[in-house]
Image (cartoon, rainbow, N blue to C red; front, side):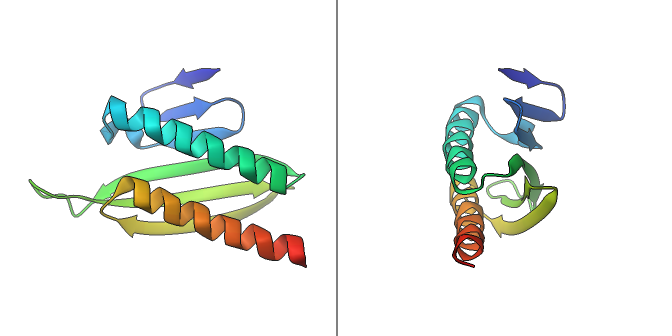
Length: 111
């Protein structure tokens, strides 16, 4: 189930994307699959998983180049974990964000 307004995209009940209107429709398909797959992994790792929110913002935009500021929140058991990165490549930036969260979650699981 997916709903969309001018600012945000909801993928199911627990994933929200905002600022992705700047991304082409082809890239958005890949972004949705990438985020959906990763969030399923987080749900399996965290029994109290509630929501994953990603905000995308273009910065330092020039005619030939742009950087993306990606900030994400993982909410579980009422607690919020945040991560933020700036990258020229949207997919590499998302991958870095997911790696940071996965590292945080692995530490939480081990403790």
